[in-house]
Length: 116
Image 1 (tube, one colour):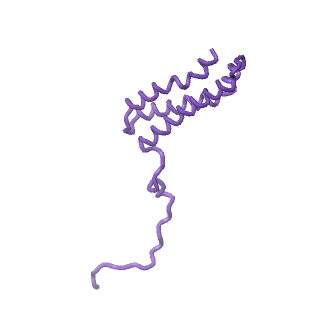
Image 2: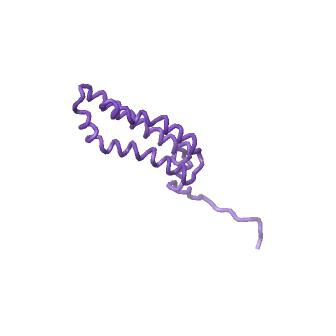
Image 3: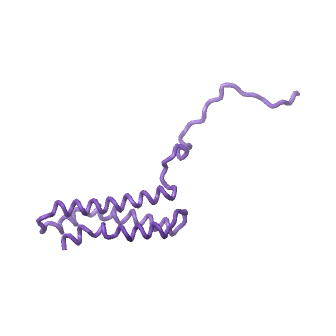
């Protein structure tokens, strides 16, 4: 039973890969909900880590099972982040930060070729 708890996040990874494939890379409500759930489930499991580790106290290999549980949830989070990057939702290019760049100060100004 303790190994079932520890291996549960790793058993969800093939299903997450299938969901990633079926959702595509377009930004719409369905892929956005899928990515949110793919990221929320591992985060929720990691936030309740102490309760999960209490369930593993009866095992003699508690440290290994806890490590497997952490690695499985880390892989789930990594898949969600990869999908966000593939959809273009993560700011990974310099052009994503242009709103924070100050425009250059002009040293001189020129006018058009109209004589008044």
